[in-house]
Image 1 (cartoon, rainbow, N blue to C red):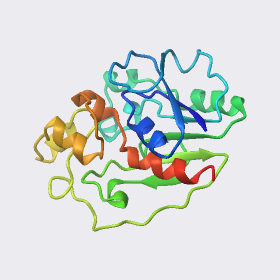
Image 2: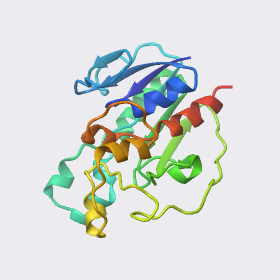
Image 3: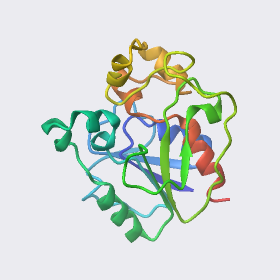
Length: 208
C-alpha cells in the first residue's frame, strides 16, 4: 500500500509503516532533514493530500499534554488544535486512515499502545483512532513500566515532567534506543516521535 504520513516529523511512525511492508511518503509543515523517505514540505490543512491507499496522521499534541494542562498559561493556549480539521480532510479522501495522539486529545481510543506491549524501555502511551479497519488491542508482555525505574523518560517537551518527579534527563542515544529506533535523530526529533513498533503493529494488521 501507498501511505501518506501527515505531520511526520523525522519519521518514527514512517519507520514502522515501512517495516510493515508498505511504501510511505512524509508530509510536514517544516523541513525534515533526517526524514529518510520521500517527503513533501507543506501545510496539512491546505496542501493536496494526493491519492494514497491509506493515511496516517499525528497532529500536534502539545495543547493536550499533561504539561499544557498543568501550565494553563498563554503559551499553552497558542499551541495548534487541528485534530478536527485534519480528521475532516481525511474523511473527505474516502480512504482508510489512522490518527495518533496523546490520551487527552479529542480522538477515539480505538487502540491504546505503550512500550510494555512491545518489550521497549519507554512508556510513551498513545491513542489511535482508526477509520476503515479494526486492530485488536495487544496484551502487556512484561510488568508495568515505571518512570525512572525501568522506563527511559521521553517527552515531547524535552522531559519537563520527568524533572518534576525527580527523574534525570536521559541522553539522546538512550532515548533513541528505548524507542526502538535504529537511525540518527536529534533530541527534539526523538522527543516528537512514537516507537516504530506501534505503527508496524497497526499496519501489519489493519489492511490484511
